[in-house]
Structures are given as structure tokens and as C-alpha cells.
Amino acid sequence: MEGCTAAAWRSTATARPSAGTAVEVLTREGAVASRVLDACAPAWRPDGALTYVRDGELWLRPGEGPDHVVISGRDLASAVGPRAELEEVAWVDDRRLWAVVRHRREAVLVRFHDRIGSVVFRARAVEGLRVDRDGALAARTAGDGVTFFDPAGRRLLSVSGEAVSWAPAGHVAAVAGRREIAFVAPGARRVERLALVATDLEWLPSR
Image (cartoon, rainbow, N blue to C red; front, side):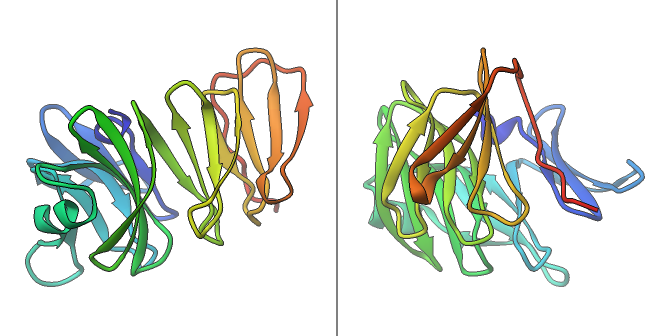
């Protein structure tokens, strides 16, 4: 499950899993600013608040006050079914997010607005959620490579690859594959390919 091993970045800090079941928040200089115990799958909300998964639920660490649950096991059960557990999230804005929920032997992709979730997609595995500025999603899905969904949750297309990064302006993503980099405009269902081997990539903002 990538969510419990991947770090989450923003311009002023990084949240990353550390040894055991904890999340560390690092300053831009790399110093440890805080540590969250019994946590994994960190994700920054657009307002700068840190969220993380604990016991299959989504928790929020606000700027002030105690940490608290923002998506509970009951919310997950209402959306997916009993004994559902959260694995990973990616925020669209401060009220909407995409989530991977484990239910029985399936990974279920769910769109949440506040605590209300709607199922979008099911597969053996879904991970590596990446959201563009308009709320479209790219994620690695078992057997398909990288699959793209529009902001409403409609599946658009899949491209062979292991890593994906959205352009800073959105609408176009780069997908790293074993033999090429694919530049994907999912809304137009257009793919252009560059014969360049890459295992990972990150689209940097222009200066």
C-alpha cells in the first residue's frame, strides 16, 4: 500500500512516514518539526492542515486544538460497506477528496464531499493518487497502469506506466513507463509519446 510509505510535499514542509507507524513533519530545511504516532498515509489539505490515516479512518491535525476524525469508519461503511478501511487520500479542496478504501479483497476508489462518499471504481489495487488543480485524478490501477478520471469520477483512459505527475497548470500529465514517457491530455483523450526511459518524474513549475 503506497499510502503508508509515500511522503506528502508542500512548499514549506514535508510529511513522511517514519520508522514504525508514525508520520514525521519536516521543515523545508529538513528538521523534524513534529511527529504523529500511530499514523500513516499523510496528505496535506489545501488550507495547509495535515491529514493522516489511523486505524482505517482519516484524521486531521488542525493548526490549533486536538487531532480529530474527519472521515470515520461509519462514513466508510455508508459509502462502501462494513469493515471498510481507508488506505490513501488526495485532497481536491478543503471539503472534497479522492480516497482509496480497502473492502474485502478490493481497492475501492471513492469521491468524498465532506463525509458523504460515492464509489467510482473498483480494482485489485489502486494507489498513488495524484489530483490536478481542477479535481481530475490520476492513479495506478492493477492491470491498467495509470488510469485517469475526470472531476465527476468518469473513467477517461489508461496509459501504461508506473509514475505520474500533473503539469502545474493542470489538464496534462506526464507518465513514466519502462520504454517511454507519455504526455496525456485525458480530457481530450490524447496521448503523445517520447522514447525516453524513466522510473519516476515530477513536473516542475516554470520560472
